[in-house]
Length: 104
Image (tube, rainbow, N blue to C red; front, side, top):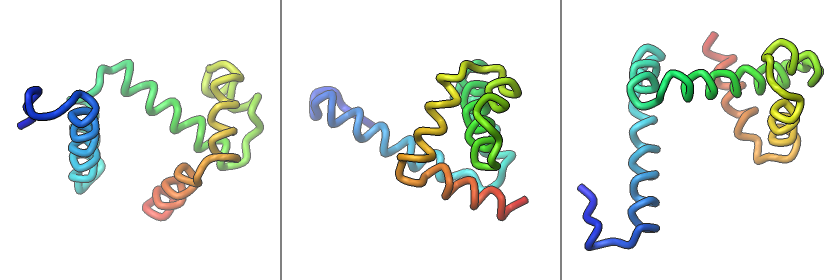
């Protein structure tokens, strides 16, 4: 699929990332998304992603940072990173939080 001789490393990484984007757009249901995540990530990586989303969700629900820290059992720096992304980021967390909320 990708040839090391025909592209530079940067080009390959860009193409691989594009393929991963397409890959993660394929699951039609939550069960398929779970299957893909469990297959491609280690259990620790999967837990970390789930924990990060839990932190973001609690922050978007209006929970104070210290409460989020205690409930998620993470450092305040981890919570602050999520809070900064919510406050100063490009709105990606908010967009997907709203979409997820609309499917519940």
